Image (cartoon, rainbow, N blue to C red; front, side, top):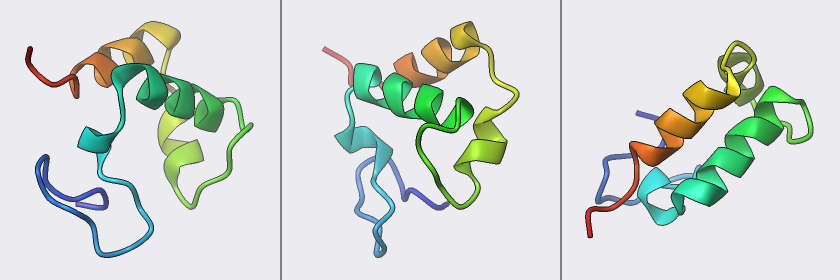
Length: 65
């Protein structure tokens, strides 16, 4: 809900996840987990994710070829 639908735009400064590459998303999620990037709730959401879970989640947003 916060990031909008796959092919839509959000009304706020929250990015639409489909606009990020899987690599960029993985980097951002890892930074939130490690508190190198501050967000409103993303740090708490990512805190419990393993590197493999972050990778799999990031890849799930990859656009089909």
